[in-house]
Amino acid sequence: MKRPFGFAILLLTAFHCEAAASPVGAMQVEKTFNAGIERWNLEMKAAATPEQRAETAAKRPDATAAARKMWAEIGASLPEEWTLEPAAWFLRVTPGLLRSQPDGSTKPTFADEIDDVRAAIIAHHLRSPKLIPVCMALVTTQDPKSLAVLEKIRTTNPDPKVQGVAALAEAMLLKNSADSPEIMRRRLTCLRKAIVDSSDVDLGGVSVAQLAEDELHVILHLTKGRVAPDLSGFDSGGRPMKLSDFTGKVVMLVFWSSKDPEAGRLVEMANEWVTKFADRPVVVIGVNHDDRKTLRELEESQVLFRNFSDPGKDLAKEYRVGTWPLVYVLGKDRVIGYSGAPGSFAELSAEAMLAGTQP
Image: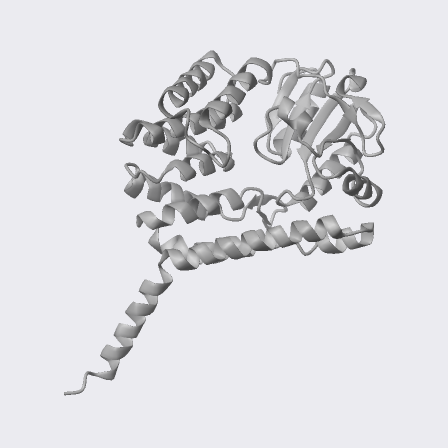
């Protein structure tokens, strides 16, 4: 007896869905995008003229398209544990990707999808031993909603190492909260737990202990109200420059490179700050980790603000920069008024510091 044709179609459909919802497709999306970025970086280094650099820069692999492909692979399968690793990649790739709203404002392109990832972690994966990459990826969202997820992982997961990494991520994300005594105590408690429970865990070539040490340095020296460290180095032309050269002005200190996601948008935003504050004592200063030749060409063709040339990230290390791009807004006496992602908060903080009020 022949099986009905419809039954065969049903079997094929089921097989297709099962094949689509598997780690293989997700791994291929990540592999393809990462390989494209590597090729693009090599092409950027090989570009010999400003024109070639501009042409090559425009060909940067599209992170938005890659994220959409990844979501097509994992979005319907988030309750399954295999999606945790590609979900972490998705969280790392999507910060800085924005879409325009009808009113002219912008919104994170994948805000709803990121909410879905957080919800799936709470509903299905709090006890998973595979959450370490997700914990650190949640830091890159720079979203207070991720704090609740990290706290639940820290208090629910049975693995002390996962708990410790969640605590570290929580402390890092709390940097964007108010610097109240209560928040400081919470950060220090989280860092203590991270060191005790997971100091030897490797996070992409850096140990939890090293990251925790950096966070302690930030608490002691780089929080709001502290005097920011002076920086001493050279600009793109090899001329000496110091951050203290700009004492008496509000400084918007931008740590960046042309390889950062949405680097073009960052340059556009920083150039707008230069124009907006042109007649007031505000200066935009970059700390750029492209090679010096690349930085010089960027300044000749696109960038309106002066930069420290920092290809070895030595100056960035003094500010313990872990997420790129990053902005510090410093008062006229180098007192820190803001640190975080570039955007409207940075601009508002500059206005507040200029007016002599705390943001």
